[in-house]
Length: 307
Image (tube, rainbow, N blue to C red; front, side, top):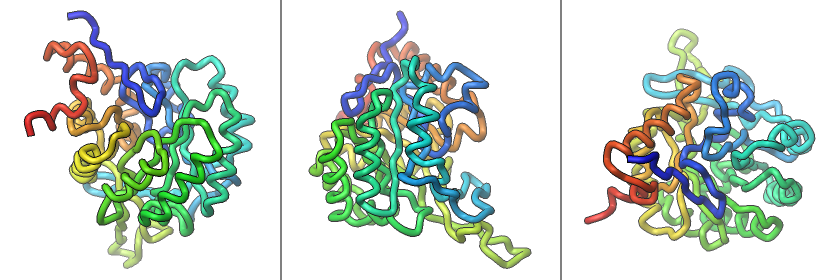
């Protein structure tokens, strides 16, 4: 069998394969470019970007757990002006779609960010982060209230022509309701899930480990929850989904795709194995060859067929 067609389209963005980097775990790709050609990615989602520079939360900000990591980085980043001035030119010759994760404390900050990035040709899409659990204002607060989520996405939609992918929080009782609200507000795609709120305690110090007390849990521990939410949401929405949460192998990625995701994003696994993304891409291609599948679309939602 000849090489299968791994290409997919998310929010009108053409991806050569369905594997993206997850925001917050890949920086701007510089560190991983030391290990492999990052042009292999389906899309590169860069770290969360805010209107002004942020120093992030007090340390410790990352701690390992038995099956994942907790982080409370707090959206540390150099701000959008630095990103446009210093980072964007590095992608001038890149063929990988560049997607920017945007976040803020106030709705107006999201709107201003979207306006500014709308003018940047290299930016092919925006991932609207309404789900970060590690900032005291904004962040997850927008994503846990249906009306707030609708209003924010509608406002961002009004100021940019870029494709909008909205990143949802799992820290809700009804993720389908939030998904439907942002779809109605004209989101072009969804990404889910962000991290689950958790904590760890140092029994010797008798204190929380993280400087921010609580943080976001990611890695293998969250995969069953993420997979369940992709399944639930894909059944109800008409826009494509980027699935993420504990993807460590090609088999994990295929589970998300068969649950209904059109693409996947890999986060925590990059810290364990910096070569994991190209390995997952190859693993998906090998699976398709072994099972005589010529196009990726044959696998999207495959586990739903015959329900």
